[in-house]
Length: 331
Image (cartoon, rainbow, N blue to C red):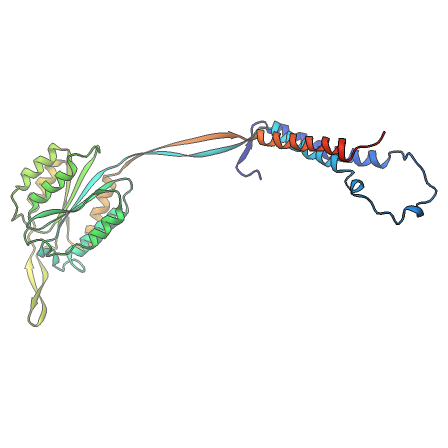
């Protein structure tokens, strides 16, 4: 009954200690009360059953006691408190820029570079809160797979649908950056981030990567670049009339270019040579780019005494009506 309720004047509740003495006095008073008419024998009355009024003779006193309890509780000022937190967030706008060229099918990552990158990107998205995230994919051209949104389930579903080959083969890093900047340039967020994953050398597109980086800098977009691929050579699946065969192909990542892109925009370049390293890189970026959260606690009191006082007065009024009319005593 009193869960979540506090009393402003809790000391008033000590008055409830008096109730057992009031009950004791009432019992003693009625026990010692003189009988107006005396009978030598009660044999004449043995077949008479008590009437309803006789059974309810103590009801007015019970009503007075209950009313007194309610009024004491009302005087103690019961209050319920509504507490909670106001969360003020300053989210980050993030564009995930993913290379889906044919070279991303190399299997120096398990099961291959593209699927490994998709898995880590999905984990990264799951760890974010309050941030708007967009998804851009590129090969010879670049297009937006998912516009900026906070619906992370939609992003993960669209990420799952990505396959190599849906765009003509090539690596247009400059176009990919320009596309990502186009998604972020009108953002009102104080922090705008692009995470670009590639395993090759820029060989396509109309936009020079460094020019695109300068444009990103103009719009305060920070770019983290990640080069994926083992050192030396990597196994690449090739379809033949006899099934899939693997041939070793050289790993060619333009690390100098990727490093310049990141340095120009205030970001950082990472090299991932395996699944574990790629996962750790995303964890580092996740820690570096944290959403600002300001939490303000609040507590609001609601007065409840009026309900107890009203109930007490109703019971007291009921006692008066019953005593004066239904259980009225003759003089």
